[in-house]
Amino acid sequence: MNYVALDATTSPRLFKTFAASTAVLLTGLALLLHATEQGSAFTTEALRRSQVERAPQALPDLALLDANGTPHNLHAWLRSNNKVWVVNFIYTRCQTVCSAQGATYQQLQADLQTQAANKAQHGSVGLLSISFDPEHDNAAALSDYAQRMRIDPATWQVLTLRKASDRQRLLDAFGIVVLPAPLGEFEHNAAFHIVNAKAQLVGIIDLATPSLALDAAKREAAP
Image (cartoon, rainbow, N blue to C red; front, side):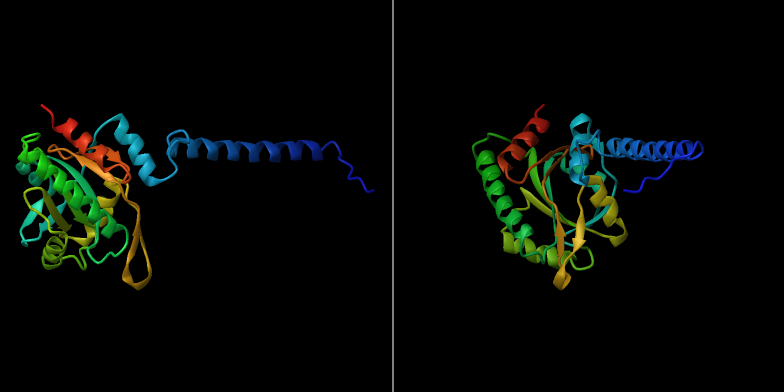
């Protein structure tokens, strides 16, 4: 067996290299913990949820378009409707997760309509779907989607961005990650987002628990 002899000058050099490497590793770990909320959030959505749990998050004032072709700005639109919204994100060509969300929203719409008829709530909660695909989702596409989903505009609204350049601001504000997929489609994460009339994101609820999303919106809307 061969042994490498360490002279008096080699050991200090190795020690300095080891110390420098350790310092870099510890610095990187500290930055990772800071960026991921002490390790509790390793995705954009999880990080956003953690932030929202601590305090409402102000939303950017984005230029939007409705299914009638009417332009809006997000802050003014939220104030004028004076509701708490359960918000999801779609693109109308989607045949997978967006279709499943559409079916869930149809059930939530029916629940809200029943509650309104029974005066259990008074229109203070609504459903909002926002398209992140303005290149394809113009007013006509939104109108077609509304017909397919049998949307009641008194309960459920659908909007799209007016400017494609605003898409990343929208996605970042809600913690949504969108990736290109084959055939011009997208892969994206999804959740229920609770937004109040002050243009604040106040809650993020798992898709598996739509009733909890309505409950959270009702609590936010309570006087």
